[in-house]
Structures are given as structure tokens and as C-alpha cells.
Length: 243
Ligand SMILES: CSCCC(=O)C(=O)COP(=O)(O)O
Ligand SMILES: [Mg+2]
Image (tube, rainbow, N blue to C red; front, side):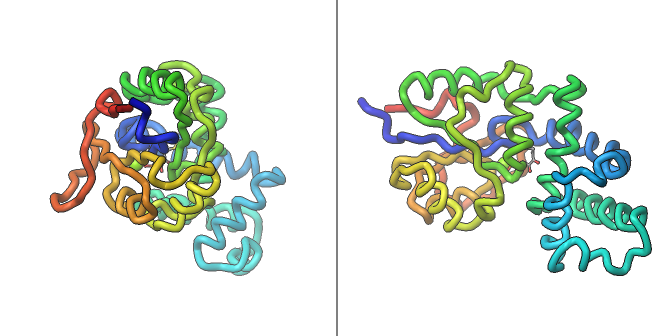
């Protein structure tokens, strides 16, 4: 029987990988390296659009406007660092924060200080799905740069060959149906031929509203899910039946 889907769209945290790896390894790495990173990368051209995005996320027009009250470079850096710590304290999935985190993780992954955790069933499923002719995409709040570092340096090796593409919050918020309409258009598939797997019911609701099929990921350490949702649950990708 042919697969009911042509595309599988995956969340990362709580789905391919544990919440605890993100919170206990990746986020502390950012907090440790933040000040030194901002000093070393301050004049790099790649940082400027990220600083503008952080300012926009904070409700300002751009970085210059947002930091107009700062007397010098050190004060501007301190304002950025304080905003990053504030956002991370609340686990805010802001686009600028996520872009900066990805830049800071680069050294950590490339120097072998971090190796991304993925559940044992994930590489096997990616192999089975792509062998069956399905295309697999990632949609995570983590920036596309961070996603590529993550799956390029996983404990199961480099898994990037399995992905046909990546989406992050530059496509739109994960809890809005319009983002899933955009993704369906970009991967050129009708929404009903796309299966989205995530640990967050509000994300699955948005995907379902856009017409996608959904599965709720239940992994150890995920936030508890309230009853009353409409999504079938799985605890392993081995439970995804291709028909
Ligand atoms: C490589 S992504 C790092 C994890 C992260 O920052 C994040 O926000 C994950 O969110 P998700 O949408 O994958 O649950
Ligand atoms: Mg998640």
C-alpha cells in the first residue's frame, strides 16, 4: 500500500531529541559563551542582521534605535547579553535569539564540545522513510543554521543527508496555521500529504488547521500534555506506519 504521506515534517526538541539535551547542555553552553562571543564577533558582518532582529523582536525599529541610550560599545553588548538572558529565562522562541544561539553553538559542535542527542529510533526511521521515497523536512524554533549543526554533529553521525530541507521561525511562528500553509507551498505538496510530528499540541493544532496530518510525540522529560486534544500519540518513530 502506498504511504499516506509524501513528506514528513519534524520538530526537534521533544520529538527527535530530548528536552533535557537542549536545556541541560545546549542552553548552558550559550549562557557560558555569550559575553566572550559578543566581544569576539562584534564587528563581524554576519552579526549585524542578527542584532537588528533581536532589536525588532524587542519591539524596536533596528539595533541603532534600540541601543540609542547606550554610551558605548560595551554598554550595547551588555544590553544584548541582558536581553538574551531574559529571553532564555522564559524560553522565548524569538527569531533573533535563536539565530544568535546558532552562531554560538557553531564552535561547540565543530570543536566536538557538543554532540547532538537523537533518540535511537530516529536514524532508523529517517533511513526507512527516505528509502521508501518520502521527503523529510525539519521545522524547529531552532534556527536553520543551528539545525544543520545539530544534525551534522549527532551521536548517530551526520544525519543531514536524510533531510530535503529545513524551516525555522523565519517562515512564521510554529503555532500559526499560516506557517504550515507556507511550508506546504514551499515543499510543493498538498497539506494532507504532509505528516507533522511535534511534542506541542498548539503546533499540531496549527498544522491540522492547515490540513496536515499530525502525530503527538511523547518522549521522556517532555512537558505534560493536557487531555482533550485530537492528535494520535507516539513514543517512537517506529510507530509511524507508512501503510
Ligand atoms: C537545533 S535546535 C535547538 C533547540 C532549540 O533551540 C529549540 O528552540 C527547539 O525548539 P523546537 O521547535 O524544535 O521544539
Ligand atoms: Mg518541540
